[in-house]
Image 1 (tube, rainbow, N blue to C red):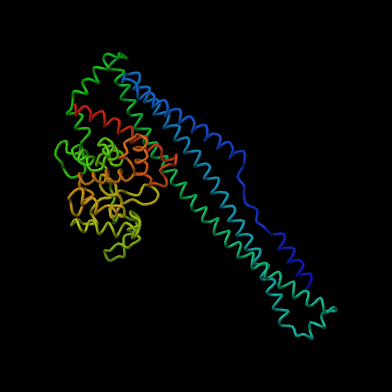
Image 2: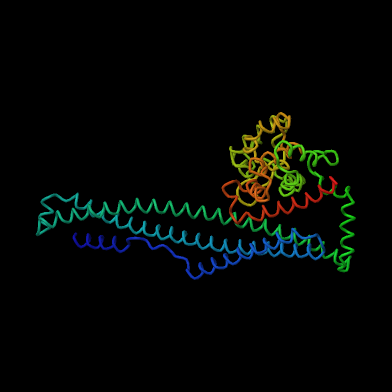
Amino acid sequence: MRTILTIALVFSVLIGPVAYAVTDEQRRARLEAELAKIEQEIQEQQVFLDQKSTERQSLERDVAVLDSQIEKAQLAIRQRNLSISQIKDEVRDREEAVRALDAKMEREKKSLAQLIRKTNEIDSLSFVEMLLGQDDLSAIFSDLDSFQVVKVSLSNSFEEIDVTKSQIQQQKENLVVKQTEELELRQIQVFEKNRVEARKVEKKEILTVTKGQEEIYQKIISDKQQSAAEIRSTLFALRGTAAIPFGDAYDYAKEASAKTGVRPALILAILKQETNLGENVGQCLLTNSPNKGDGKGKNTGRAFAQVMKGSRDVDPFIEIVGELGLDPYSQVVSCPPGYGYGGAMGPAQFIPSTWMLYKDRLGTVTGEKPPNPWNPRTAVFATAVLMEDNGADQGSSFAERRAALRYFAGWVNANKPAYAFYGDSVMEIASDMQQQIDILEG
């Protein structure tokens, strides 16, 4: 009996603290060094862009700006790839740690089972049988004490493993979510790079037409500035929303600006970034889901969650469209972006739960009760009001860019480098919008 106890005690000591998997330190250091270098290069490109923006518009300057924008986008994509590699390493570490804890748990369960069987054997023996089986009475009580110590130790160990395993599992799940988010952001950045490259193709076409002559390029710019109708058609097309009279979008932005202090160009830039000025308001329906429902023509809550986040957005959405007299199952919303949920509504892309927070206020400033997120004028006001709350009414470039990031990622995530591209893109669009507005205003 004492031999079995000794083996069990030694076994428990040997399997003691679990050794967590450690990522290769050299790989980690290399990734961190590359990230630091790329972040510095991105900053240098931003400084270059800031300098160029103050120069007189010319053929050479515009092509240099586009080259820098493309380089910056490519650096950002490389930055994202390195971040994803780091996250994969961390996920793998935690997976190995969880497996090690599982193995330890199984080993200790077997040890405990053996101890329980032996304890039951002792319990079934009479005191006389124990005396006959042992030469030393003190050894009997020593063995019983040792059994109890081991059982308590194993019980404590199980509790610690459960807590640690739960923590590591949660960390792993959080990292997987972050990895998915990083992949989605990288995809968005690729779209941004493609947009800039498309503009570079346009510049190359101009170079071909002008044969590199600045005089001809300046004439093209002048002709474009004189074509107010062309500018208006580019600036104000709100295809995919309710038909509005020509040029009303800018009038809405000026009206909203007067109430919020957010400049019209920035309001329109957000709308263009979000939905291309209302052209792409979504293609999903509340009923879009692999789950076809309960077989009685009704969709289940699980079906709703495929597009929107459960009751957080489904219930408000049904209330919003109900007040507007719309069919909740035929009104399009944004699709899930590859992770998380969709359900954003109209040109301003408010999710239903956020819209409910602003509904009464929007009804007051627009005079529309209940306010309709698919109405172009209301959407413009919604963007302006949220941007005002985000600090865009302060007027500085810094405040406007920060407000745009808050519009996209919320206040908590607005300072994350991963989202910088959104703020940069909005400010670039706003600059173009302002130039066009200045032409229209003379």
